[in-house]
Amino acid sequence: MEHVSFPPLSRVAICGGTHGNEMSGVYMVREMQKQMVDQTGSVSITSVVSNPRAVEACRRYTETDLNRCFTNALLSAPITDSTPYELRRAQELNVQLGPKGSQEAMDLICDLHNTTANMGLCLIFYSSDWINLHIYKYIQSKITSAPVRAIQLEIPISEAYSLESVGKHGFSIEVGPQPTGVLRADIFNIAKEAVDLTIEWIQRFNSGSTFEGGEVEAYTLVKSVDYPRDPKTNEITAAIHPQLQV
Image (spheres, rainbow, N blue to C red):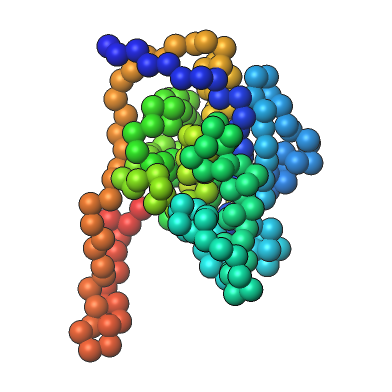
């Protein structure tokens, strides 16, 4: 089997509040900052509230979706008086955690999200990054309180639009079900366990441990399927069947 090595992952960013009404990440980052968690063994940790204005308003965003602002084109766009707050904030985060695509970028960024869908815990990442895949495999082997899945987005990194793409490696963690603007203890605990396991794996990796290869299952986008709609009004005319609802 092929052997692959990577340099240590010494600088890690844990981000929450990219969407200001997804509360697990908001509260986790606040607690890390309160406890002044900035170093765990060999790992230097930066905790970031990504979208402070949206968090304060408890809204997904204030002007435009921050988690769609991290393409190379948007990060290099000139700032004008009409530039939305979230695009300005994306460029600030790129300076703090990147620059994207550079050797100065964070070794790994973990961005925390919630969903109202009953999907358990899901890692979302770009391309077949071996670091991300091994962390996913490790988390999946340890967490038993919820299903653990992965979504792989087949998008060139220059066109990758979400915050974690700023790091050399990175993924978002999406945990649900949780209503927007609400903190559920069980969902928070699942997200916290995933973050702790990520840091645990990185410390093992940095210490020189080797990890066996294998197979993991990841979902990719095939196509979008819309609901049936009324041809005259375009209103949705059906719902997900109870036996298929998850």
